[in-house]
Length: 132
Image 1 (cartoon, one colour):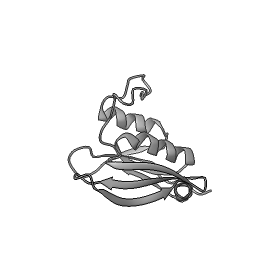
Image 2 (cartoon, rainbow, N blue to C red):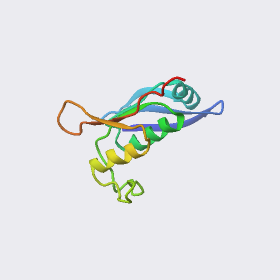
Image 3 (cartoon, rainbow, N blue to C red):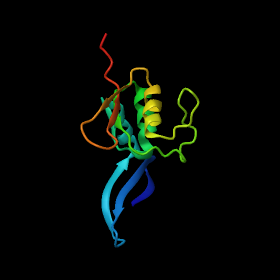
Image 4 (cartoon, rainbow, N blue to C red):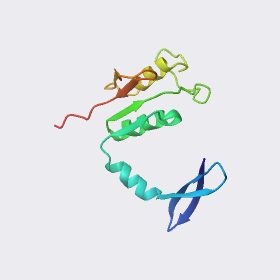
């Protein structure tokens, strides 16, 4: 579990990511300043999500919006949570295969490869843009 305490300090939103142990003890975590986080993300050169669960769509949208290359290895579909996800033929994204297709449809340069292990082993990615 995450203790997601939001505090305001000098007009900068911060989140305290402390972990709560199974015995209910708070294990101190990092305090992440939203401004610092934004600055770090704006300077990244690749966005990666390995088994990102519900965040897969946001990871890809963020990278696409900033023109960054991205790489995701999705696992769970969460079709009941993301009912507005549709592939181009209008079908609701319900299967892993459809999720892979939907992610590819977010960027015309998206590619798919198969990783060398069993299970959900499809990696969807884009490459860096060619320098002019």
